[in-house]
Image (cartoon, rainbow, N blue to C red; front, side):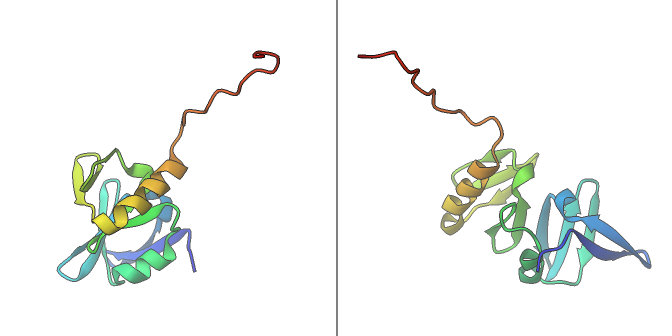
Length: 121
């Protein structure tokens, strides 16, 4: 089941967090932290459950403690992924899949030039 927003408790109120605003999710001391722009919200769900709810063509688990939104990735290195200044470890097992996800989401991809008819032999 994928959802459009996650409802989280903040100071006694429930607030919706749009899924596509989430930059990354981290695990800190057995709690999941949702990082969306200026907000960091602690939730009671585990990382596996949150990952099931998120679109798997956009959100990607790069490490056992991190899920990143591919739309926010600024740099991909051999063993790490950056979202702005934040750097996340990238496991070897997940590297190829993340590259595929980023390639599908890439804007301005180079296209091969089609040969023009009538030019040639």
